Length: 334
Image 1 (cartoon, one colour):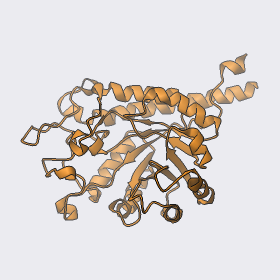
Image 2 (spheres, rainbow, N blue to C red):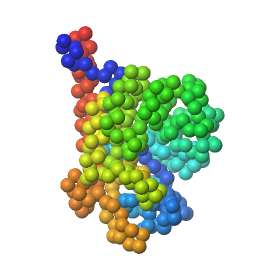
Image 3 (cartoon, rainbow, N blue to C red):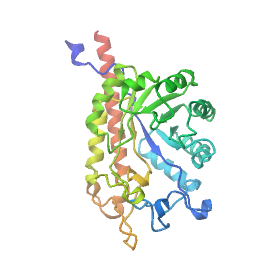
């Protein structure tokens, strides 16, 4: 009876670790010779940006080491343990910036993983990925997240062989189809998409993943608004922080192996928690801000979401520690 009362998910690692998706793709004329990403879809920086929110740092370059250091320090202070750097294939801007991300993150005690994006689908083939995984491991990467793993050129059989022959690198698939991920030989699953996959799906996802021996890393985020960057009319409102809080609660209750956060600075899709500030409207329209989030106004609101992340990562670590204790007590009584 006592052991039953203390039952906890047997497959969950209860690590209390959190990971955040990070985008090293931003560029400026001063630093990089041209704007990168800020000017997507015909926008004209430095005031007219391809984002619904305006960054508190202004228009910045991901190759500026001062910016990178400040961002890594901010992520570390928020209690996050791993930076997942967006990666678009060898020779891409994101690839060339990866060594600097590794240096600055590790200098602050952060682990670094990559999210392997669907870079030019004709290039992300089984053959190139086999080489990519070896080279990423040689660069110091021990965990990879694969965004949209099952595209036109990659099926379950392809991934099964890749994962079977892969070096000792943990590979997670962005999918809620746990059976398919297991058949493809992935080590775990994550969700990334905070518009389509809501917190109510997390418990079932982790139960299915753990039943098949897979890592479960559901993704939480503050909202979604990509209207200025892509024209996507779908919006998941932030509700002054309630959306973010609800996803965190659901993720922790699902007893995951780690929680992933979408995102630190994906400004295009409006999922970022990096500080944002108010910006006066002009001919190009008005930006949204974090005003009112968690009751904050003015300068205090700029860091509302990164500060709230500090709260949730601490809650998650405590919950994971309790789970470990309960598991140990349950094992003793069996």
